[in-house]
Length: 293
Image 1: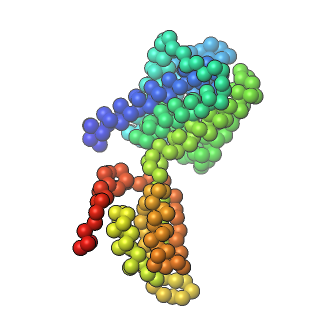
Image 2 (image 1 turned 120 degrees about the horizontal axis):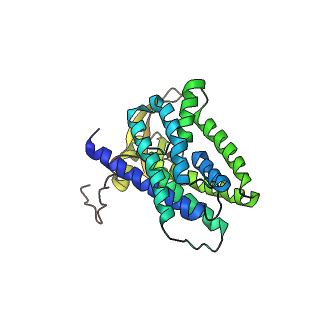
Image 3 (image 1 turned 135 degrees about the vertical axis):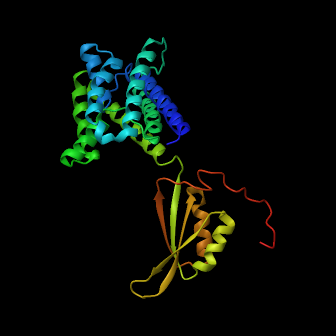
């Protein structure tokens, strides 16, 4: 891996942990919102025993990371150590800053802001392959050792930790914590999905050869032909496949129906898109098209 790529990833991890810790210190803690994972345990220790989360984050995570060293792999192991140490450092720094976010004790707004900050911070960390240790590592250890899926382990751990959090928060705040968790997970998913809303379109039609040039010309998107065969008719067909933004879906359907109102159109959610027209600059559409085109 190139050094500039490693440097960029480390910067993103530092930025992500900074944002995550900021939300934890200035939104979660003042408004008594719990968390799942190891961070949730550090908040329980803070509430019950007065232990600084900056310290408990390291104490809890370092043994877990050491145990999961072989499973994580060299790159993930390195990034996880950086993420864990950086999170602990930012928690320590932010607690020393005299700052207050006045939300007028509105728990709904607090839950939404905490979810946005935590989800964005964690999302960009996960995006470059980093983690902040904790329950992610435990889940991967259990998956390899006893075959329990990562998703199931994380779910069980979060339920146990959130239930234990009722020792220092009431049921009302627990409900707002669930709102926080919902927003958090959706922000993380949006970032990991590429941050671009796209749809894959499959078109089965007898007029695919006429439809495809029109789609390429008007939308300036690439189109591919997939070769298929009708199971009942045995007739070979050219199936159109292309990826477009959600805003372009109506235009795609309009063009298709101009040629074939009976065309079978399937729209698929695309979770990540790379390539010209999506992560790179799109060709600028011309105001006036030449008649020769």
